[in-house]
Image 1 (cartoon, one colour):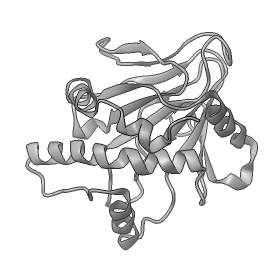
Image 2 (image 1 turned 90 degrees about the horizontal axis):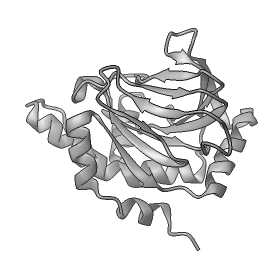
Image 3 (image 1 turned 180 degrees about the vertical axis):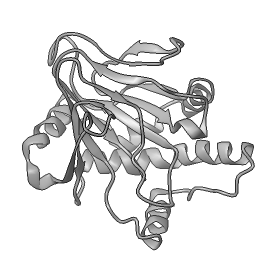
Length: 217
């Protein structure tokens, strides 16, 4: 039996993740999701009732491809990733806020963040599922819906290079300092550019692939 999502996230080296975010603006974890979990999430893309809206990235100049925002209730895996990754990421985000001498402090757990969002009228779920075809890419960005903004995002690659698609799926920086091929179900954690060292990279796919971003706010 596979460990729970909470157990898998608890095993991560969060100190190393924080150091990578400090230096590069992004960090990569070991593989966290099983092939079955990835397949289950990919299969949801055609189930329109699971989503609240669709975004054409080319139309908005966000890249080439599309994504759909999940509706409530969230898929179990997405909800658990969101819940159990939030607390260690909030600690990193609050360290940045203190270093920047801002007055912002992010709630310690996801329940607190969602309650804060609700008080500000931000009640729409924000996790989403991305879909790329050959040549697709995502200019890393964060959709903002109100005053409350959490500065870190998670991105999970759900397709396996060489099996689900041919070509390359990678995260790259326009400055050339960071480029790495992503393994299936690895999670990339990235900071919003205004909150950390500049991160102007792209998720780039040269063949059909699907990925999911589990945003927290």
